[in-house]
Length: 165
Image (tube, rainbow, N blue to C red):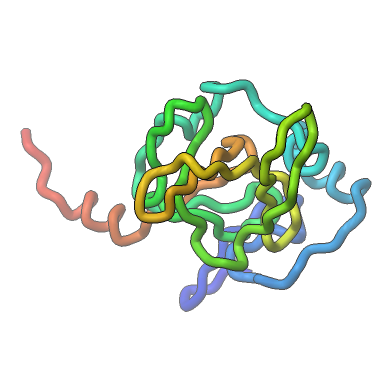
């Protein structure tokens, strides 16, 4: 599945995970339960929420791309991440119009907009209209359902940089 011209992110034990395949993923809940770690399954398939400020990605600012931890779909670029103070990784814009699905969420006595992965419909979090320019949006995302890949060019430049002794 990985080749030199078009390398794809994959995960052992997860046959639907691919950073290059954009086809919709439709598998049973039982199959999701078999291939996802329990914490990812709880949030992605059961619409759970991780505790605020518990994500390793909350104060993480490497250059690269954030992917759906369930299927590998590209979701956000690191340059759209910002510190919102809400306790979850926050972004002001998805990577493309099709990477995210928007669903009304009236649970818990609130009117919110749920955001789901555009490829596998995993629950990611919610979007609010109190974000920074240029969009004014704040995508508040559970870090457990995000994978991150460092930008190859940034990594290459870092490795080429002369080290001070």
